Image (cartoon, rainbow, N blue to C red; front, side, top):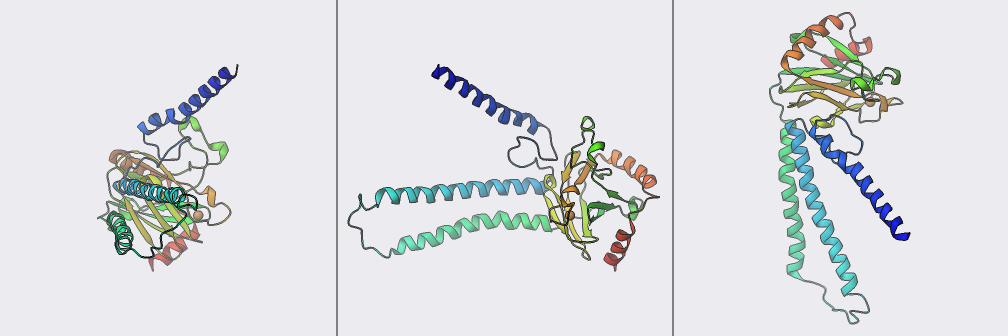
Length: 289
Ligand SMILES: [Cu+2]
């Protein structure tokens, strides 16, 4: 009876493990630009910078795991070997030159090993390549506006979260992430996002692209990415900005060059009569001065 109960508990545990981990290879096979149920690790990287962030993270994980295990091992050894019972007459040693040199030099070397890829990553992030397309992004309470430059037709639009009643999961909508108008950019092109805000500080973050930049009123920050896979990638405002901070998602659709041109042709007409609101126009004028 007891054995059977243990057996069924084990089977339930195995099934649960399978449910949690079994879904992961399938999920990883496709690129998902948002958090997944049961997800382990990061969202797949779709830009070289995001891939570099992930490999830097992996390196740090190895380093901190090795340090933690080493320190834990030393602690356990000291507790076991040098407690009052096993070591009744303690040594009176107070200094050990070699040991002191070692515990200074080794951490310095570890920091150097970390610093090299860290500064390399920062340099790659902050060195802006020549952009194929520049889009201006404005954070507002509580949505984002995107403005496309003159060469693309000089149009802009607001991107507002879809209300629950408009979310159609059969069409790929995701509650709390899908928006009415997504920003659209071409694949394999260097895109520059110039980011500002019209009211309070927001933060523009798209994990799959490895980008995170503050949107500050009166300042024009910029970041860049080169998405290598088509798809729709989501992000969220990451600086607490007021009551609807949680409800101003970012949605960027990466499409082929042809699809992008078709979208631009469409968007020029669609958004021609609906410029972004006056708050933004004022903020834009201020930012341009
Ligand atoms: Cu915000």
